[in-house]
Amino acid sequence: MQHSGILIVDFGSQYTFLIARRLRELGVYTEIVGPLIEASACTTQVKGVILAGGPQSVTDKNAPKIPAWIDQVSCPVLGICYGMQGLVQGDGGKIVSGSAREYGEESLKLQSSSALFENVKDNSTVWMSHGDHCKSLPEGWQETAQSSTGVCIAASSGRKYGIQFHPEVVHTTEGSKILENFARGICGAQEVWKPASMLEKARTHVLDTVKSGSVLMACSGGVDSTVATLLIAKTIGQERVRAVLVDHGLLRKDEAAWVKKELDAAGFQNFEVLQEQERFFKALAGVQDPEQKRKIIGRVFIEVFEDYAAKFPDIAYLGQGTLYPDVIESAGSGFGSHTIKSHHNVGGLPEKMNLKLLEPFRDLFKDEVRIIGSELGLTKKLLMRHPFPGPGLGIRVIGEVTSEKCEILQRVDHIFIEALHESGLYDTTWQAYAGLLPVKTVGVMGDGRSYLDTVVLRAVEAQDGMTATASALPHSFLQAVSNKIIRQVPEVGRVFYDCTGKPPGTIELE
Image 1 (cartoon, rainbow, N blue to C red):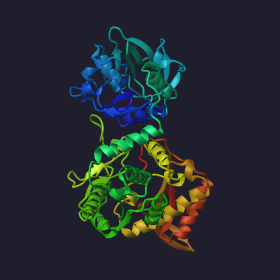
Image 2: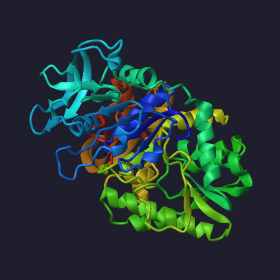
Image 3: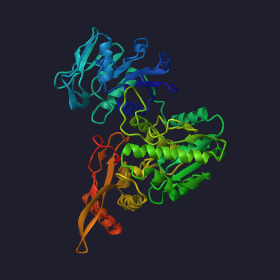
Image 4: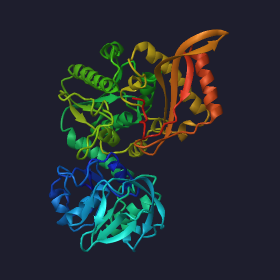
């Protein structure tokens, strides 16, 4: 651990990273490791340890065990959900499965005083997601809170603390306070995670990775890859970085020109656009499965980059703007974590590549990357741009992807995004885009029957992209945009608005 902070042991929960994010928002540095991490990782720099959740039951024969070194370190330990159950079971308590299941909102009924709940309101809302619960606590443990059904959801013993609910999710109203009580009050962790620290960590990663040779930087037009390009160039020198944008026909309207303009304004000149539309559409022909499309796009990306790098013998690394949520959703962390979808730059990569990966933001979140970009002097217009997936329109065209479908979607998406800007709604949404459905519907145009394509508009509000709610865009705005799309894009005859949150959906359609 590079900074004095909190170590999080991940047992496979999709939301473990939210714990880290909440603590970093408090200025507390965190790192996430798997349960098989060696005791040597817990140096004197670690102020505390959090044992996070996971999809399994501690009563299962092959369930991951709480690391033995937890009983050897002197720092405080907090178990959350699976982590609490593992602590209790390890100290001799009894965990039972299949009864007293609790999912969703519950009330936190405080039973006794605890430093973990200092200044936390009694009967505040907490978020539950468990099928196992503590039947009996070990000797020396004290129950500190129950749910409204009388189930033990918090207990402590000496330096060990356990909570059955999830303080990291926004549904737990006092969650940030509980995490602050543990990290700051109980562990004594200091506010060391600041913009300068984030920038230093990213630069250190680049310097430690790139000992010699140059970097081929994969630009997508998104915030992450653009900031990564400039960070790497400023760290090892622009002459050692070749930025390439692969125009695979799946980009937003006029994307290549926009990226070049922004990089030019930032002082980066070593940039090239590769026209590879035919190559990608040929590889995607006839393919409808979303996972297969993602993997094909990831594979062809690497083929293009390796063909390009072969022209320059000094290129040894492929730089990407991969973020930690990308890694989590591609099941890149923890024990038994489940794949939600393969991101093209994580799960979509081929097993063997000729280039080594350079990913300075792999353990950072988008808001942290934006802070780094601000430190590097990038404009707010670029930094606050909505996320755009690497597979691009390939996962916004449902079903088979063709150049004709992408061209239609580019025009629709452009109208939607421009309307958001003009109405002052763009900055209040986390991400917005248009998708093309594999459905034609009947309509009436010019007193005649029409049978045209159907598109869906999606806009969400989020803090981190792992959970999200549909944006409540004004009906008058949506009606105006719908009319404009149908007037200006003759192939489209019907427009829907997607009101699905995440979960149960994902932000992208595929």
